[in-house]
Image (cartoon, rainbow, N blue to C red; front, side, top):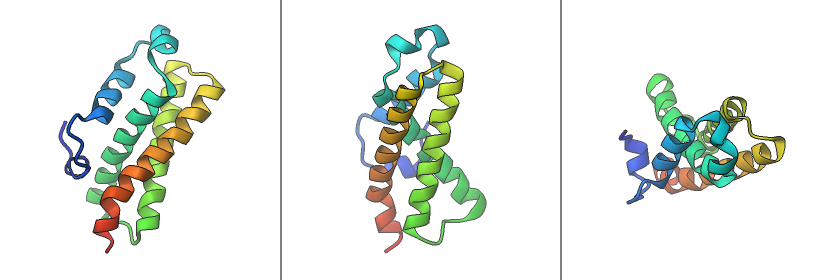
Amino acid sequence: MAFGWLHKLHKSDYREEKAYEQVVNAEKPEHKAALSHELIAAAAAYEAAKKYEEHCAANGKPDSHAKAKELMAAFSGAFVDRMVETKGLDTIDKEKAKHDAKKRAEEQSDEVLIVEYQ
């Protein structure tokens, strides 16, 4: 998948996209061995970027950088919640993954959104 926003991040190896595919396609029984909270966080950041682009296409860009970052955090958190429900992570893994996902999404959004809101 190619998303314009993601390409602006200048990631040559698309780690987040690879993590996304691995997490989404993981079988439930394997999750404990295969899905670390770091991997889920990377996948969540990728999902957040996709959802942000969809939101902007449907609703226009948010009014501010701060609002855009809030959206990114919400999208990444929703992805983690969905993965916890479908893959069976425990509460500690869920909280670590949500924390890491929010941080990663904010870092990525800072790289791109600061330029958009200047």
